Image 1 (tube, rainbow, N blue to C red):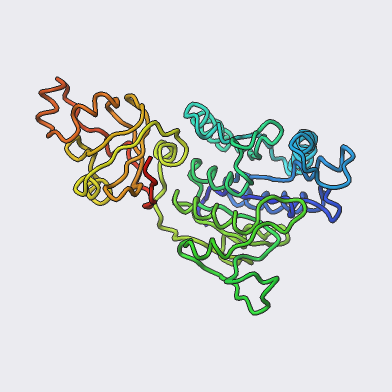
Image 2: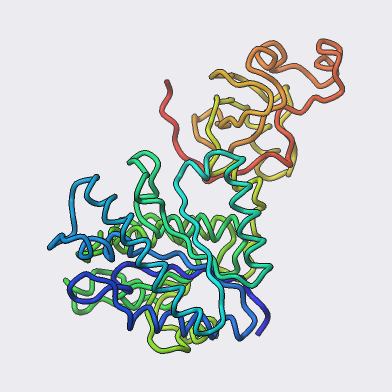
Length: 375
């Protein structure tokens, strides 16, 4: 089997015992399975939940806390316990681990994003196993991922993983809730995630986790947009992850193996960058951007909105107010307001510049069409 880069997401329910505390037996099994991947020559990144679940019993809470301060305190204690447990078990296999704690801010700020990418690549090059969690102890609501399912999708994308394995306590996706409908049928393979599937998915039923099957489906959809295959399911024993790679996993396989990987810079533009404005383009420019692989020229620009400067990222919408993509602009709002609708020749004359692309194709990302409400 060819060497692959694999992201393994382990949820709280797959790490804790019946009382909600950290289960050393479960940690040991996960470590054995990941060690088997490493011995087979693969690179592995772990996205691990469990900090709050591990910490709240250690500091005297009888049940999982509900206030923000209590959850963050539990996470601060639990993260130490979680990493200690992983480190101790991996050391027995002569493997080194590293801890990375991320928030949404690390994805939206390009310098942080690039630094995280460089750090992860260096760790993998050195044979280290990165263990990533959300920085629950300091994150505030608007800077959180909501759950580690989405974090695992974003990490799998920007590190260019071959596959994202989401381990859970349910053996994959069903066409209905199997807890409510005994006749529900398990879905073994999916080529894509549609809105009907998302709408049918349920929230979490776990007392120790935050992400239900809906969050896993949404994470899978995001990972697929980056060109990363996804497996959602469960397994047991030290060969469970190898079995998943071989196509014998107990769960649902999602996506084509031939999906192209989206480069890190374009991932940042399309999914993480702050948006400074909006450009409306005509039908010809829309076709050229989406299907022609062309850059956006001033002639195709109809309206501009916002307060952007050179190098900022803007949304691009069509004349039906549908979002078609995002890109990095080569003109400020004031400059583009003066040259929109002009031919490239007229732009060169008016601006005394050789560059006429509003958004170069290398800094453009096409997105699924989404209706934008006019401001």
